[in-house]
Length: 124
Image 1 (cartoon, rainbow, N blue to C red):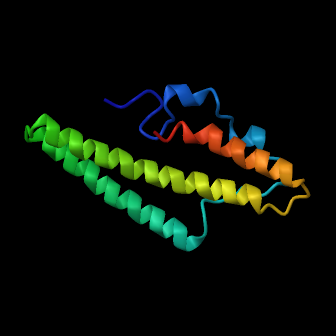
Image 2: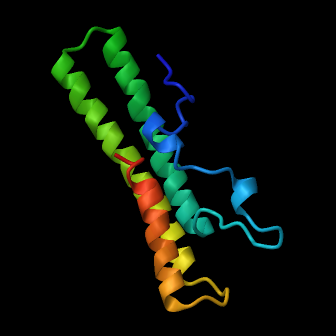
């Protein structure tokens, strides 16, 4: 069963904290990408391995494997997805901290903490 919001949608408890990109981005502000090219390739490769893991889980369920084996693989897949999420959060925090915008150190730290708190509880 696909959860409310789709498979890539945030859990319900995380949605209230999110805002649309159009609302939060300033007209002349550059929107940060997810890491540099090499890191994006690593993340995409992780996601492709995770996709294989998920297909393996589907096959396990279709062939009637034991619950404990399925749950073990399910937890491994969830942990792998969480790691991708943490890399993305880390990049976003780093982007906040090395921003070239004229902000005080305290504002930069507050922004990085805000990014972490906004998204870290969605990566559980």
